[in-house]
Length: 457
Image (cartoon, rainbow, N blue to C red):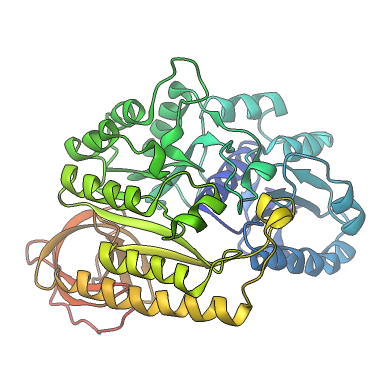
């Protein structure tokens, strides 16, 4: 143990929900007197928050776990906590047998097992009891690490845990459990606490975020929740993800359009553009219904940007069916497309019933076709911002340049000697590429003339 404060290190893989879960773990450890370590070798507690949505993510976690064996041998007092979707909500016997050097197994979104383990050794309780820590987390009373207070600009707040929809390709319902909506009061309290610690932007999270409240009889819906959260004093920007087309209502879209704090960006995955593939995925909408939804989103929110998710090489997807996806993206010209090659996940309906008959070579071919297509489309979309003035929320300095995002999530880089952390400033765009833009501060906000290097980051 460190003389002053024991140290923790958290390794996070996967989605924004895992990022939020890691934040909750950090908060619980901070309340117990722990402080963040810059490197795993300096830590008394190492947490691996894992993802298994893709085989590659699971492989990285197994590799990291194996590498920690040497750390454990050199430091037997080191506490290793395996957390997240690799653990899931069911038994962990197979993991305990494979990795006996792991001390604690925690399901997604639950720091409780780690707190309980550390609390067994009274010398490790330096601040509050296990029960007090757990109650604080349940009440939304999050404590950011000391180095992040005032420096963390954007944070994630889960509002729906788990998922009950069960798309045939998805392992999330089996690993994160059934859908559970968090109470409005707890969510608002968590947002208030984060804003009080310097956070400017909050993203509300759910595996299907627009199903918020559906599991509660006469419960609130996402539109109602957004209106309440948007009123939190000091909150500059509010976002939400990820939505499902079937629960994207006009009421929700109207709230986004009408409230200046809610950013005009909608993430609504299509996954595939062919109706037969969509049926096999159990998505429960058609190509045309998705097109109609995009048109409705754009009608209600004129300045909106839209993101989607695509899986290529789903079992049984023919080259012709893949072209339906390609043509859909060509026609809709969306701002973001998160691309993935289909990866068989144990226990899913697709794995049990559909196999995996598209070769890796063909999956890569389709992936690269969409990648090139999106680079062209997004490059053309972003070129329209050339010379325009946009508002940017600056997050951090990266390689000598300030990094921030517009209301539509466009990535922008600016050079300045000022500390721009957490500031929302108007900038003039001077260069655009498919993945980022360069800009300059307007004269009234600039401290000196700015020279820009045109690098597409």
